[in-house]
Length: 279
Ligand code: AMP
Image (tube, rainbow, N blue to C red; front, side, top):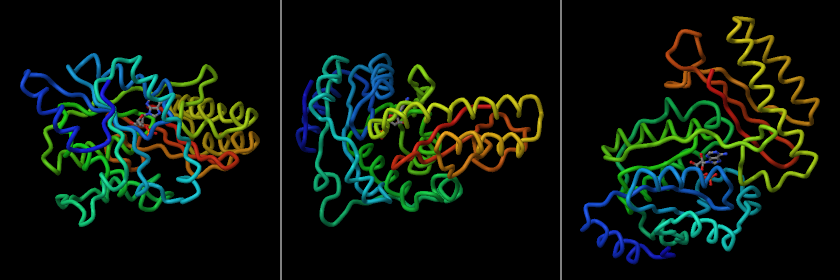
């Protein structure tokens, strides 16, 4: 595995690959890698000749400075995991490399309709930062495919639309959420949970499952939601939102769309958790 910190080194290797009629799969991450990330890496390894993984804790997508400072960083362990998975390039740039003085050009895009909802409301500026960094990586790496988790459902939807509007010839492959045995969606931030909070956090997936069942039985969604919120609060969580939306537009579900999804964000202690379940 090449560990690459500079764009020119990245380009030197990729230029050689291109000579061999190869394809490149790209997995962007912020490190503190867990089994969810590794599932994306495996998907990339299966479908492409070469795999590039980036680890970059992108400062522009943190709307909360404390969250950025406390974001877990486990570079040594991450390196061992990626090496074991057979990754070809680990790209570890610093912020100056990604955000050069004078900036970089991005095409005009209209993504407000996907960004002004759910996490876009709760975390002002977050998706603007995500779009900026993913655009930059795609422009630098020019992969054939990008691999993203369904855990961050709104994120992958926005990136899909961004690539479409920017005319990027990159296929987005989504990977189902990997969970702990108790149902808790794996997340780098879970390492900041106390043992007790970690147990309680698992309630979130259970609650989403119950609300989903109520929807399928055509029971009242608002009532099911109220019950769910009570259960989460009893487990020590503060609920930011639980919404049932059209999986294509993120507009409130009418119950008639092709695919709908239940999305939730909660806080437990200092940690913010998101999860979702297709209905
Ligand atoms: P992050 O390091 O949190 O920015 O995540 C990097 C990528 O891993 C994103 O595409 C996430 O959606 C994905 N990811 C994070 N957690 C999981 C999980 N539990 N299962 C599957 N993919 C995940």
